[in-house]
Image (tube, rainbow, N blue to C red; front, side):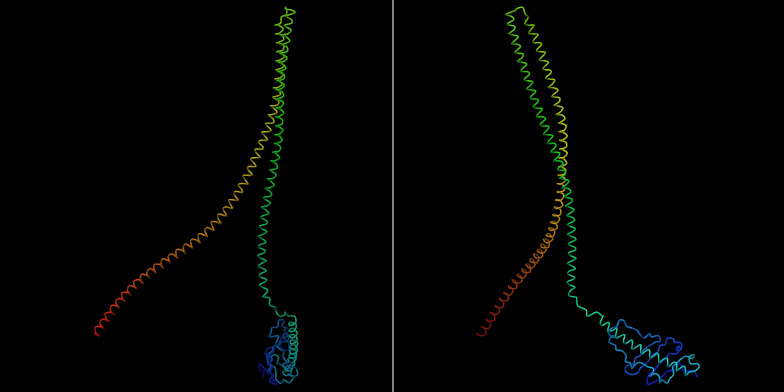
Length: 416
C-alpha cells in the first residue's frame, strides 16, 4: 500500500507539513512551514543552509519596536520526540524499511528545528545590537536652520551685487586707465614735438641773431668804407688844391725869375700825372669796394638761403602745429557734438515724455470740458423743465384758486 501524497505529524495541537518530492536524505535545501497555536502563532520559513539569519542593516521604527519571539515558540527536539505521526515523502524515499526512514527524517527535522531556534535567538540578539548601535551612532535630532536661510540669501545677494559692482568699477578703471595712457602718450608726443619745435625756433633765433649781427657788421664796414672813400676823395681834392697852389706860386716865381719856361706844359703834365694817379686810386678803391661788396653779397646770399631754409622749416613746423591744433579742435568738436547729440537725444526723450503727458492732460481736459458742457446742457434742460413745471404749477394753482372761489360763492349763495 503506497503512502498518501501528503502525511501529517500531529502532537499537542501542532502540525508540521513537509511538501512532497524533497530529498531529505541527500541534504538538499528543505523549506518547512511550522504553524504554532496560541497568541504567538505565526508562519515561519527556514532552510537547511541557515538562510534565516538576515541581519537588517537599516531598521525602521516598526522593526526597532518589534520584540524578539519568546523561546517557548521555538520547537525543540524534546517537543518533537513524542511525535507519533509519519512524514510525507516520495515513493522512492519510502521503499524498504519505512519505519526506519521515517524515524531518520523525524530526527533530522528535530535537529533542523533546533538550529532554527538557535538562529532566531541569535538573530534577535543581532537585531537588538544593531538597534542599539543605530541609536548610539545615528544622527541626533535635526536642528532648525530655516531662520538662517534668509540671512544667507541676503548675504549671497549682497555678495553677488558687490561682485557685479566690483566688476563694473574694475571695467571703468581699466577704461579710464587706457584713456589716461592714451592721453599720456599723446601728451608725451606733443611735448616732444613742442620741444623739438622750440629747439628749432631757438636755433633759428640764434641764426637770425648771427645774421643780424653779420649784417650790422657789414653795414658798419660799408659805412667805414664810405667814410674812407670820402676821406680819400677829400685828401685827393686837398692834394690837388695844394699842388695847384704850389704850381701857381712857382709859376709866379718863375715868371719873375725866368720868363723863358713853359708853365702851361708843366701844369698840363702835372695835371695829367695827378689825373692818372687819381684815376688809378679811384679804380683801385672801386675794385676793392666792388670785390668787398660781392663777398658781402655772397655771404648775405648764403645767410639768406639759410634764413630761407630756416623760415621754411619754421613754416612747416608752424603748419604742423596748426594741423595738430586743428586735429585737437576737431576731436574736441566731435566730442562736443557727441555730447550735444546725447544731450539733444535726452532732452528730446524728456520733451517727448512731457509732450505725451501734455497730450494726456489735454485729452483729460477735453473730457472734462465735454463733461462740463454735457452737465451744463443737462442743467439747462433741468432749469427749463423746472421753469415749465413752475409755470404749470402756477397755472394749476390759479385754476384751483378760481374753482375754490367759485365754490365759495356757490356755498354763500346757497346759504342765502
